[in-house]
Image (tube, rainbow, N blue to C red; front, side, top):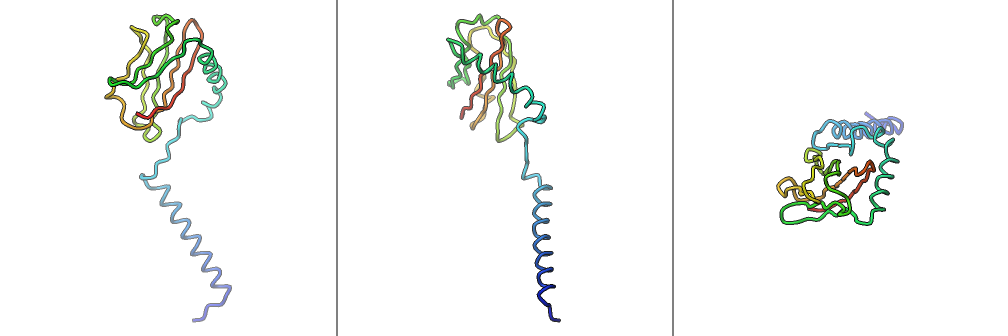
Length: 148
């Protein structure tokens, strides 16, 4: 059987399209290639971004800044010394870019001017830390990435 140019071109296109579709279906159906979003409701989170910018600006304007330090016991978060620690409320969120099952949040409940996140809660690797706190009805936000 002889195949002319037209039939050969059509067979080549069909073969190429089948090859591409095979990989598209395979990559979308495999559990090995997970595509986690940073946030589940991305567009809803985007609407609150201006508030986040204002809170970061409030934290930047402080004379005594919040400090995040890695110690032997864990991650030490030292709040500004000029703020009364009894009036500080908020939340500390730790986000692990490589695995969303490791993400966790802690409420800020202080008995001293600092908060310690135990070493056993943090696995080695990169962590994105987001500390949102309120003091005297003014909101602050500190963001930082650390490698633990």
